[in-house]
Amino acid sequence: MDELIEETGSAGETTWTKEVKLDDGGYIRTKVEEVSNGFLKCVDKNTKEGDKWTFETVKSIHSDNPLKEKSLVEKLAEALKE
Image (cartoon, rainbow, N blue to C red; front, side, top):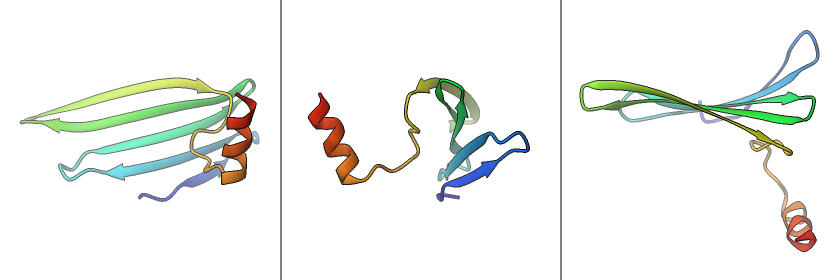
């Protein structure tokens, strides 16, 4: 599943999920949830190192949706603000 999936819950909250399958059978799943002060990004990595599986989760907060593709105009406007 390399495509971006958008879901809206019963309370109106929106989440976006993107999962990349790895050659070793593992995956990297990125899930973004819209919260009151921005977006919560959670990246789950399930990888195989030798005979052992490892699982890692990294969470971060963003002001913009990190999974939303920005247009060239939006990127240029941001660069000009800096």
